[in-house]
Image (cartoon, rainbow, N blue to C red; front, side, top):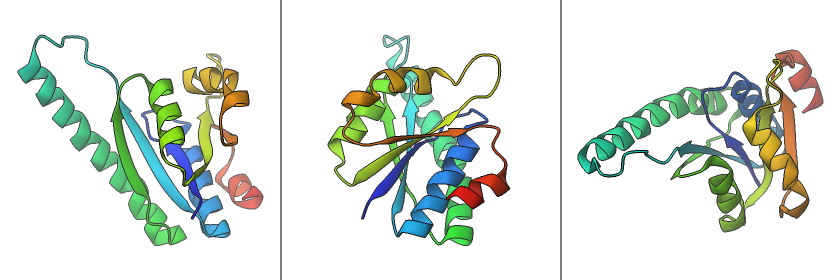
Amino acid sequence: MRKFLVVLDDTRECLNAMRFAALRAARTGGGVQILSIIPPEEFQHWMGVADLMRAEARERIEAHFEVFAKWMRDKQGINPELVIREGDPVTEILAQVREDGSVGVLVLGAGSDKGGPGPLVTALSRSSGSLPIPVTIVPGDMSKERLESIT
């Protein structure tokens, strides 16, 4: 089964990327893999604190994931898979794409404010020619109705 890989983060545009991935997966018989990345810790010498911070980050990610997972299960009939990685976001996204052969499309949400599309879209657009899968960039301010009509 082909999976749509979508990045879970705290950005506003993440919502539209999640919607798009779930709608496309439901309409094409695919699956959704949700990737969340914990940034590397700055103070590695405080191992006890770093371990606690990682555990708290995982709990927050899992709670955030459950909100999207419930919607996907209830509304789209899709049971998403959660993958949590730690490191540089771009490096970890590329590693996940290369390591999981069932990932068929990377779905990213693009910011619509003055700051541009966002660091992930910018960085991954530069390397999109060498990726083994297509990248779909979903505008962050696209309406729910428009998303439904194009998926």
